[in-house]
Length: 357
Image (cartoon, rainbow, N blue to C red):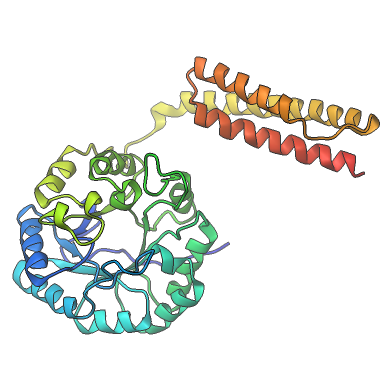
């Protein structure tokens, strides 16, 4: 089993005890004036870690792709004038060397970079012998092993102050979110590595500033340790991702609205309810096993009578009726669709095995 040798992510006077640990600042460092104004406004709201994109890889060429190393001097000035720590994204060894030269306190690796093991290894090699916190965003595609692989490469290079950033996963379906949350993946990451701090990036998940509060609350309910939020002194005029940035004042209001559940409270009072869950899960598994046995009998019948496995009309009928029944019982259509598709997929797989014996 993969293991990580971790040290606490805490910075001087900024620890994870201050939950959520918040990293905030503009998507991009655009001008020195914009950076300094935003930083001073965030500092006035009590924020302690300032982020800004120096190099901005865009999906398509032609947009603003970052001010480059010139902006690192502005981050240095932010530290001097506000006392805030600074953070920025790195995607190459050159970025690492430049950021370290200007005293950046925290580095993060973006989603596109995480998806490329060659790029992650280049960054890991550049960081050998350096003690600096590094946060790793999830890859653009929902691949937990690829995400873990990036952490392992950094850890083996000697980076022990590690954390991850959940920024959602790319999808064609952008009706609600810019990137689908798929919360079960960071939850599984936390299960495998309980000591690994997880930050939520509600700006990139939602893609809209009015979703930041609800996404941040969900992250807190899932016991994430921190948030990384895009905040700009004049969001509507931002040179990149204007729709997902908030003013420092709005960010303060969002943070003040969050309800923080007790992460250490005893759960003994839940024991009876958990026993009920265990019993119901056992019943569910028994029912599923019986259903699959019936599906096997159907497979034998189809084989004996030379009938094709896939009967789309029947499947469509089941999907429609069961989803409707589920909704009437208080289950969402989206949940029912996932469950029924999984059951159907397993049934088809078993029948194919029977057919080919």
